[in-house]
Image (tube, rainbow, N blue to C red):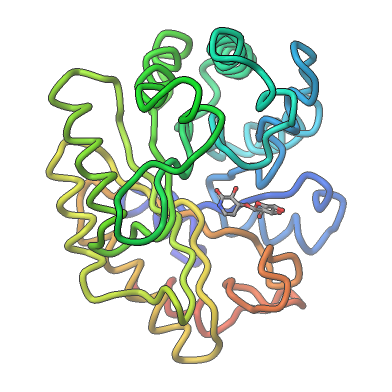
Length: 302
Ligand code: XIL
């Protein structure tokens, strides 16, 4: 197959990209999006600050545009993200425990109800663990006021609202075997043992010289898959250029394909022009929407 999405589909998988609503007016952007990808993740439009900027007042307009674009073209949608410490409006952080618990319940319920049946997978909780060697939870209003149980509370609410959506935990610097990924692994293992509803683990896949694609990438995916969850690479981008960048992309895609429960890959943007890493060139299409060596390497191994 001649496109990323079609090639992945032949492997029973999807190949997706993050999409920014304000780029959907650009012809080249939309052409590459529609040609190459069969899954989308709204890059910012489904975050708490975008959807519920003030308590109880929801604005789905921008995210709806992306969802409707995707649905009209038979693309899947990944929902990103329900509970996260970042891009969280300040009103959430100022609530006491009881009101925060109500607000979290309301947010998950309203958002998932709005798109019920239309989201393939939700990142229910994003980035709940600290970097470094402690394996500890990250401080956040949720962690600090609701306690460690907030994650399973969020997953249970999510399951009750849209039982058809796959429910994922998503994080970064968890791609290889390290203290942080092991902490996530232990949480997922515990959830599976106790029947907390979790279906998938998202590995963001933001790689650079400080956090390279390590040799144990595939092995790490395998240990999670062995817990009985699906695996998704959810925000892939790799700093660098040329053949070195291409080789790293190849490693990641091969690692996913080697694990039967790795169901799809999403790159974090269509083009280097709009990467969130403003100084870098981490994606598959350059700033002029030309295919990079990394693109060819990915298509070749799919
Ligand atoms: C980033 C977006 O790409 C930026 O546009 C925004 O300014 C900040 O967030 N981990 C995540 C994503 O889960 O939501 C982040 O997206 C990148 C890191």
